[in-house]
Image 1 (cartoon, rainbow, N blue to C red):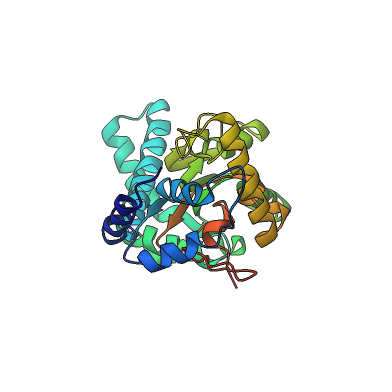
Image 2 (image 1 turned 90 degrees about the vertical axis):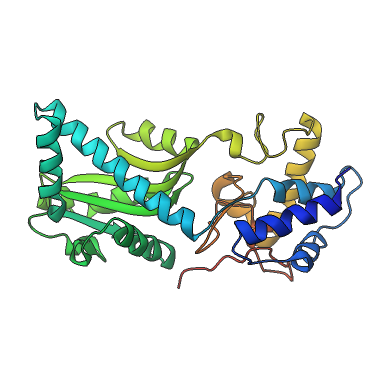
Length: 291
């Protein structure tokens, strides 16, 4: 049994420390009360266990991830130059001189616009290097970095790369190198992208293993559930998710099964029972759809 007094104290503490005071005990109670009783599983306990596995990245953590991601990009670029024969000092100078020839772009949507803004701010980058569309790539650019908050299924990266090919970007800029930079990337998304093209240049701050999928065999979220109980929980959540958002999003986009949220939004890779507000469902953290 869940000690609900300790649970709500935990939520109160984490709400102040991590969740940026975006919820309260009454909100959590309302959210838990969305779940109808089930014969084969204690849904109240299931809801509590899922919430205990929810990972939230607040504004300070987003800023840290943006800075870390750019440091990873710098490290990778310098490593490439050192392999060509430059000393560490010369590679550092080369990178400093090359920053002005980097274009940054976020995919369409308010979330990536926010990430691009924070990314520029914390890394001291100039605004003119940040473009709104691939048509704006500067003639002297030698690098294009696509900035995103999360790569879940990997489809967004693959589709964006196809749009670059369709726009003949590689013909117009034959020397340009493309990097896909994401604050969070899933192991599944990474493997899918590499399976299509092992030469994709991917940068990320955090890599989430399949253990962060809510119902995976070695999940760290429902770790104390038996295989049968975990499958029952999955079926319950899948049924709810399908009712709320349809088959594509019933367990998060294309079965992502994630339980994560950001300061600026909740990704659709997260189980919709966290964020959906359809059919009178009360979300714990609302997702803001892009216009």
